[in-house]
Length: 492
Image 1 (cartoon, rainbow, N blue to C red):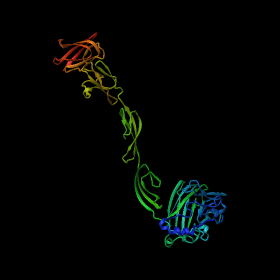
Image 2: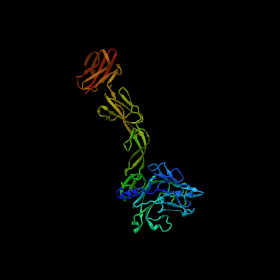
Image 3: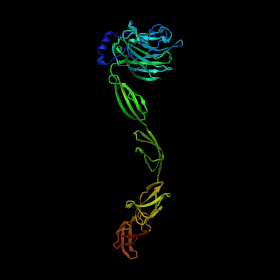
Image 4: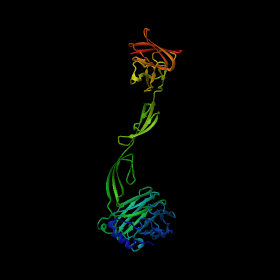
């Protein structure tokens, strides 16, 4: 048997109506059930076909206590259509009584029975909306429905069987969206109060109905889950958002929109009433672009985040004009100078790269261009450091500097370690023989053959010499044992 509101609780809830803003509908959380474990198990204060009139109780039970995946707490209401000898039984539950006077589904209705406390729900509030949560598995074209009707002390019927419509004070009817809804989804539907004096009347009862299909023609595979029903006493709030997003926008309630438009969204506000949000949405889209790039040695991507050194196809992302992603496909070709090495033979430096354009540089003078020296080989006319600038495949690069220290050596049996520096000289110069010799004789003649100086050195490797004569060309002869060198020296 059903249990109605305890009178004391009703009085308390009524007295606190204005401070608490809401009253929970009878067993709206579906946590308490009666006749648990039997064929007519039902939510407390609610009724199913098993306690209906006429042929209602003959058909299989369609109202179930669901412990798997409730919205909150331990249980929720599960309404599952069934079949009885080929006839579809629409799953329903109500705070009133299900009336089945015949086997024709068109004759079925639900009503409050004011004279029987098992089949009515006293209620004296004037709520603003009905709120709850649902999941839905759609069979055929079925649409689930949750509804509430506020009325006076009369056996209100839904649908009206004649005479009860004039006793309706307000109604709130919510039809779930077409299709299946796999996750718990909040709904909020306002109470519509009838016009005239009846709409200003304080109700005495509420008739709540939940059904898996809102038409008698239904599918046996339809299931509606309901949880956390309540009536709300407050006024919805409104606000407007101007939003600009890239590609898509997820609304405060979790809806996803991909086009620019004006949308309405609803979420609970601080008093669990509707916060109705007008969203002026601008959706800007990402763009794509392809560029083909040829670069020397390496390439820094448009975003600056990558440096690539190999030819390949790469992706990079930068903001576009609408501040969304501009995704760039980069077809990259990396060129380089194929060889930067050189070979030195005496005072001649040769580039090992045979397919480039050449320009020889003086490293000792800030890599200044040596006028007229643009061949693959370069013959140094004075000691110093030299490099070659190579242009190939649209790239320009420079070899390492090479030191030339043997300009002016006309004869040499001391080997490759013999060094004369500086040449040209301002008068003072040095000769490095490459190792220490016990005795060493030096003669210095001018260009006419006249001897201008001579010296003998012992146990020496480096000879520090000086020409005191005027500027000109001098011949320096060095004899150490069986080793001999003749050097052409310029004094500036």
